Image (tube, rainbow, N blue to C red; front, side, top):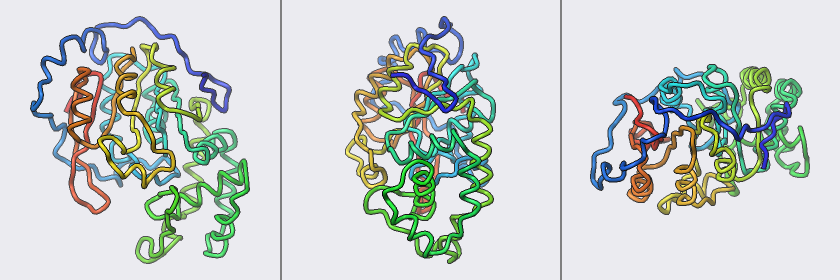
Length: 324
């Protein structure tokens, strides 16, 4: 497999020689399993919940399980490396906020995103190929209930028409959920309904900004685990792994994502083989912790707010110890 972007770029499978500096894997995993004994306390990197309003909103997609709130930790992860990654790999892209942050904040040379959902994949391809056409389409659309129903009902479209339909459905569906059975929001924010999630000028601006960075963004439709295997030999790669929430019997992924099946054991094994650096994000569960510790990965936790505004912790799993 070769991951090709709108500009014809491909994923570089050869990397530079590894070093023993901070942020590298060389020698870090050996014997780590003995140190990470069952019951060892997982460090908490911060006691402050990130206000997402303080983080740049760069993706036009509202994605269930989106990681805008994790952007400060993604930045710290990349800032803490002793090398500049040539490629940032996001195998389960969704809204792509991690890759957009890495490229637009100039932490990496380029990024490759992967998504299995064909509708979301088509949206990304169209956005990278002709952002201006999609942005104009967004600006021209009057988001009345009648117009929305007409677009959503037309399931036989393709190309740019399908991309626009996917974006509209994502914006007006409850919680950004596009899986089978998802419903359209009714009240919206402050009772404004659809208009509270379809702010055309802002969405068009985000799409145009992505278009200006298209030469540094490559897209690959398919299996995220396969993309990890493709890029595993590059020591100049940085991976961000945010898989569907189906580990340890979690049902959320089945409800939130059309394509939610993933063998988490295989994913962890593939991550143990990469020469680059990585950060994974998971719900905290004994099964996930055991898979990570068995392979000598590093663990940490960060606070977040649920959709019901309850403070809870997300588990971070990484190739090296993350700084608080």
